[in-house]
Amino acid sequence: MNALHKLIKEAGWTKSSLSEGADDCVEASLLTAVVLRDSKDPEGPWLVFTVAEWVAFLAGARLGEFDITRLGDATG
Image (tube, rainbow, N blue to C red; front, side, top):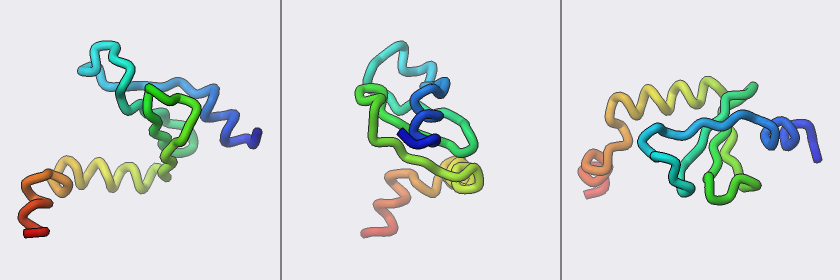
């Protein structure tokens, strides 16, 4: 097991309070990077983002860049 894998396995994970304890949620952990996983399958696979990538994603989400209606307009 490499160092990142060990760090991820031992990380503290957070999910939305709106999940109300459900087991089919996206969970996030902030380590030296931002890591996302599916709570139904905590052993893998994980999505790993640099902090800069995560900040850019959150900024885009706040601006509505990923809204379904907006994406639908772009694809016609």
